[in-house]
Image (cartoon, rainbow, N blue to C red; front, side, top):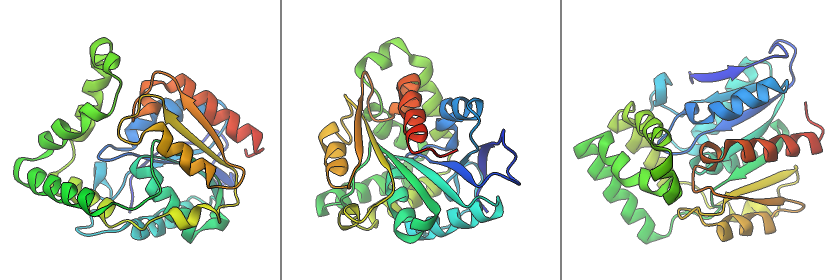
Length: 263
């Protein structure tokens, strides 16, 4: 069973729609707290699960995003939620694609942030394999050393050390085997590029204007291949844009939900 953070002003026994937040690697649902607070205040039912092994979720030694999508569907069913606006950032975006592929009827809309559609090229897989070996050997601190420098703009590392420390603490809590299992799922993900032209729900694509891990052009390419998708840059944000610029991210997200008249 997946652990999750939820907020439910409308009472989950009667709410048919929720906003489903899928977190980045190797973070947890805690990264979404600014969005959970804002959306619950606005009256939306919110569910933010932790991926396998993260913060007490069921551990799986070897899992795929297909496995995770099925588990997300079970979670929504258990909460009596019929459909969701699925919000995925980075790894969460990969998971959102897979959830839509398997459960389009449960996907009311998509918000894809700081992610990519393509599968890994061979050289990227080689780099990820080396990452797995290093984290298995050294532990979560190695994941922090490799990942966190790519998360934020240069200014944030200087002016907001508490935000950087918060992210490091989230990663530090995760066992090495859980981190590497998630990385292997990323390595083995399906290329979502062929899916893009078949997506027919409302879609918003967000990107930090200083995202070096998945540059704005990569995210804009996603939106250009999805019929009717909207694209928005978030100023002063890097890869984990929802934490770095939460107010701008929240405005875009709420505007999307209001436009598609989902509540």
